[in-house]
Length: 217
Figure: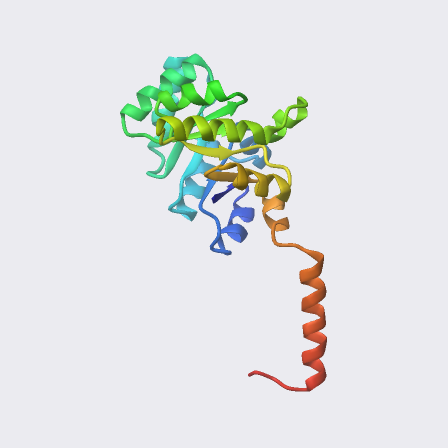
Protein backbone atom coordinates (compact mmCIF):
# COMPACT_ATOMS: atom_id res chain seq x y z
CA UNK A 1 0.00 0.00 0.00
CA UNK A 2 1.35 3.41 -0.99
CA UNK A 3 1.63 6.27 1.49
CA UNK A 4 0.53 9.80 0.62
CA UNK A 5 0.81 12.68 3.08
CA UNK A 6 -2.33 14.80 3.46
CA UNK A 7 -1.00 18.32 4.01
CA UNK A 8 -0.15 21.64 2.38
CA UNK A 9 2.71 22.38 4.79
CA UNK A 10 6.03 22.11 2.96
CA UNK A 11 7.97 21.89 6.24
CA UNK A 12 6.08 18.72 7.12
CA UNK A 13 6.64 17.32 3.65
CA UNK A 14 10.40 17.88 3.75
CA UNK A 15 10.59 15.77 6.90
CA UNK A 16 8.26 13.12 5.49
CA UNK A 17 10.09 12.83 2.16
CA UNK A 18 13.42 12.52 4.00
CA UNK A 19 12.30 9.08 5.22
CA UNK A 20 12.13 7.74 1.67
CA UNK A 21 8.77 6.13 2.52
CA UNK A 22 6.32 8.63 1.04
CA UNK A 23 4.87 8.12 -2.45
CA UNK A 24 2.74 11.23 -2.97
CA UNK A 25 0.73 14.11 -1.52
CA UNK A 26 -2.92 15.13 -1.27
CA UNK A 27 -4.19 18.62 -0.55
CA UNK A 28 -7.60 20.28 -0.40
CA UNK A 29 -8.95 23.84 -0.12
CA UNK A 30 -9.10 23.63 3.68
CA UNK A 31 -5.44 22.60 3.94
CA UNK A 32 -4.36 25.32 1.51
CA UNK A 33 -6.33 27.94 3.48
CA UNK A 34 -4.67 26.76 6.69
CA UNK A 35 -1.22 27.28 5.14
CA UNK A 36 -2.03 30.96 4.50
CA UNK A 37 -0.14 30.87 1.18
CA UNK A 38 -1.02 31.35 -2.49
CA UNK A 39 -2.74 28.25 -3.83
CA UNK A 40 -0.77 27.78 -7.05
CA UNK A 41 2.50 28.60 -5.35
CA UNK A 42 1.92 25.89 -2.74
CA UNK A 43 1.09 23.27 -5.39
CA UNK A 44 4.12 24.26 -7.48
CA UNK A 45 6.44 24.02 -4.45
CA UNK A 46 5.09 20.60 -3.47
CA UNK A 47 5.43 19.28 -7.02
CA UNK A 48 9.08 20.35 -7.04
CA UNK A 49 9.67 18.27 -3.91
CA UNK A 50 8.51 14.95 -5.36
CA UNK A 51 8.08 13.04 -8.60
CA UNK A 52 5.03 11.36 -7.06
CA UNK A 53 1.41 12.41 -7.61
CA UNK A 54 0.21 15.63 -5.97
CA UNK A 55 -3.57 16.06 -5.72
CA UNK A 56 -4.77 19.64 -6.20
CA UNK A 57 -8.49 20.29 -5.88
CA UNK A 58 -10.69 22.52 -8.03
CA UNK A 59 -12.57 25.27 -6.20
CA UNK A 60 -15.76 25.48 -8.26
CA UNK A 61 -18.70 23.10 -8.53
CA UNK A 62 -20.04 23.55 -12.07
CA UNK A 63 -18.77 21.55 -15.04
CA UNK A 64 -17.50 24.38 -17.25
CA UNK A 65 -15.51 26.10 -14.52
CA UNK A 66 -14.18 22.85 -13.04
CA UNK A 67 -12.93 21.84 -16.48
CA UNK A 68 -11.10 25.15 -16.91
CA UNK A 69 -9.67 25.01 -13.38
CA UNK A 70 -8.61 21.40 -13.85
CA UNK A 71 -6.62 22.25 -16.95
CA UNK A 72 -4.97 25.19 -15.21
CA UNK A 73 -3.97 22.95 -12.30
CA UNK A 74 -2.64 20.25 -14.62
CA UNK A 75 -0.43 22.86 -16.31
CA UNK A 76 1.34 23.66 -13.02
CA UNK A 77 3.38 20.45 -13.16
CA UNK A 78 3.36 17.06 -14.81
CA UNK A 79 2.66 15.23 -11.55
CA UNK A 80 -0.48 17.18 -10.59
CA UNK A 81 -3.57 15.03 -10.07
CA UNK A 82 -6.76 17.07 -10.45
CA UNK A 83 -9.07 16.49 -7.51
CA UNK A 84 -12.80 16.64 -8.23
CA UNK A 85 -15.96 16.32 -6.12
CA UNK A 86 -18.16 13.25 -6.51
CA UNK A 87 -21.05 15.02 -8.21
CA UNK A 88 -22.54 14.65 -11.69
CA UNK A 89 -20.58 17.68 -12.86
CA UNK A 90 -17.50 16.33 -11.13
CA UNK A 91 -17.79 12.99 -12.92
CA UNK A 92 -18.39 14.73 -16.27
CA UNK A 93 -15.23 16.75 -15.67
CA UNK A 94 -13.37 13.59 -14.66
CA UNK A 95 -14.38 11.88 -17.90
CA UNK A 96 -13.24 14.86 -19.98
CA UNK A 97 -9.90 15.35 -18.20
CA UNK A 98 -9.16 11.63 -18.27
CA UNK A 99 -9.75 11.69 -22.01
CA UNK A 100 -7.12 14.43 -22.22
CA UNK A 101 -4.61 12.23 -20.38
CA UNK A 102 -4.87 14.14 -17.08
CA UNK A 103 -4.87 12.10 -13.86
CA UNK A 104 -7.83 12.65 -11.54
CA UNK A 105 -8.76 12.01 -7.92
CA UNK A 106 -12.51 11.88 -7.26
CA UNK A 107 -13.08 12.86 -3.65
CA UNK A 108 -15.82 12.89 -1.00
CA UNK A 109 -16.82 9.29 -1.68
CA UNK A 110 -19.19 7.74 0.86
CA UNK A 111 -20.72 4.77 -0.95
CA UNK A 112 -19.67 1.87 -3.17
CA UNK A 113 -22.04 2.96 -5.93
CA UNK A 114 -20.39 6.39 -6.00
CA UNK A 115 -17.01 4.67 -6.31
CA UNK A 116 -18.33 2.49 -9.14
CA UNK A 117 -19.48 5.56 -11.09
CA UNK A 118 -16.11 7.27 -10.54
CA UNK A 119 -14.32 4.21 -11.95
CA UNK A 120 -16.60 4.24 -14.98
CA UNK A 121 -15.72 7.91 -15.46
CA UNK A 122 -12.05 6.92 -15.59
CA UNK A 123 -10.86 8.28 -12.26
CA UNK A 124 -7.22 7.56 -11.48
CA UNK A 125 -8.02 7.55 -7.75
CA UNK A 126 -11.20 7.31 -5.68
CA UNK A 127 -11.09 8.82 -2.18
CA UNK A 128 -13.51 7.22 0.31
CA UNK A 129 -13.58 9.18 3.58
CA UNK A 130 -13.23 6.53 6.28
CA UNK A 131 -13.30 8.70 9.38
CA UNK A 132 -16.37 10.60 8.25
CA UNK A 133 -18.19 7.34 7.47
CA UNK A 134 -17.29 6.11 10.97
CA UNK A 135 -18.80 9.31 12.36
CA UNK A 136 -22.21 8.33 10.92
CA UNK A 137 -22.15 5.05 12.84
CA UNK A 138 -21.21 2.88 9.85
CA UNK A 139 -17.78 1.18 9.61
CA UNK A 140 -15.65 2.99 7.05
CA UNK A 141 -13.54 -0.10 6.42
CA UNK A 142 -16.59 -1.94 5.09
CA UNK A 143 -16.73 0.72 2.38
CA UNK A 144 -13.13 0.00 1.37
CA UNK A 145 -13.88 -3.73 1.18
CA UNK A 146 -17.01 -3.16 -0.93
CA UNK A 147 -15.18 -0.90 -3.38
CA UNK A 148 -12.32 -3.40 -3.60
CA UNK A 149 -14.74 -6.22 -4.44
CA UNK A 150 -16.46 -4.20 -7.18
CA UNK A 151 -13.21 -2.99 -8.73
CA UNK A 152 -11.73 -6.49 -8.73
CA UNK A 153 -14.92 -8.00 -10.17
CA UNK A 154 -14.86 -5.70 -13.19
CA UNK A 155 -11.10 -5.08 -13.48
CA UNK A 156 -11.32 -1.33 -12.93
CA UNK A 157 -7.90 0.32 -12.77
CA UNK A 158 -8.99 3.13 -10.44
CA UNK A 159 -6.89 3.04 -7.26
CA UNK A 160 -8.60 3.14 -3.87
CA UNK A 161 -7.15 6.01 -1.86
CA UNK A 162 -8.23 5.72 1.78
CA UNK A 163 -8.84 9.24 3.12
CA UNK A 164 -9.99 10.84 6.36
CA UNK A 165 -7.43 8.68 8.17
CA UNK A 166 -7.28 9.46 11.88
CA UNK A 167 -5.04 6.84 13.49
CA UNK A 168 -2.46 4.11 12.86
CA UNK A 169 -5.30 1.60 13.30
CA UNK A 170 -7.07 3.17 10.34
CA UNK A 171 -3.92 2.75 8.25
CA UNK A 172 -3.55 -0.92 9.17
CA UNK A 173 -7.20 -1.72 8.56
CA UNK A 174 -7.18 0.12 5.22
CA UNK A 175 -4.27 -2.03 4.10
CA UNK A 176 -6.03 -5.21 5.20
CA UNK A 177 -9.24 -4.14 3.44
CA UNK A 178 -7.40 -3.73 0.15
CA UNK A 179 -6.77 0.00 -0.23
CA UNK A 180 -4.09 0.86 -2.79
CA UNK A 181 -3.13 4.07 -1.01
CA UNK A 182 -3.63 5.69 2.38
CA UNK A 183 -3.37 9.46 2.56
CA UNK A 184 -2.26 10.28 6.06
CA UNK A 185 -1.96 13.47 8.13
CA UNK A 186 1.67 14.13 9.05
CA UNK A 187 1.11 13.50 12.78
CA UNK A 188 -0.47 10.10 12.06
CA UNK A 189 2.44 9.26 9.75
CA UNK A 190 4.89 10.04 12.57
CA UNK A 191 2.93 7.83 14.98
CA UNK A 192 3.04 4.76 12.71
CA UNK A 193 6.52 3.87 13.92
CA UNK A 194 5.96 4.18 17.64
CA UNK A 195 5.57 1.21 19.98
CA UNK A 196 6.41 1.11 23.72
CA UNK A 197 8.15 -2.26 23.42
CA UNK A 198 10.44 -0.94 20.70
CA UNK A 199 11.39 2.00 22.91
CA UNK A 200 11.88 -0.26 25.93
CA UNK A 201 14.05 -2.69 23.97
CA UNK A 202 16.20 0.05 22.47
CA UNK A 203 16.73 1.62 25.89
CA UNK A 204 17.91 -1.74 27.28
CA UNK A 205 20.27 -2.35 24.34
CA UNK A 206 21.73 1.16 24.71
CA UNK A 207 22.39 0.73 28.43
CA UNK A 208 23.95 -2.70 27.95
CA UNK A 209 26.23 -1.43 25.22
CA UNK A 210 27.30 1.57 27.28
CA UNK A 211 28.23 -0.85 30.05
CA UNK A 212 30.80 -2.59 27.81
CA UNK A 213 32.83 0.60 27.40
CA UNK A 214 33.33 -0.22 23.71
CA UNK A 215 32.92 1.81 20.54
CA UNK A 216 32.20 0.62 17.01
CA UNK A 217 33.93 3.67 15.50
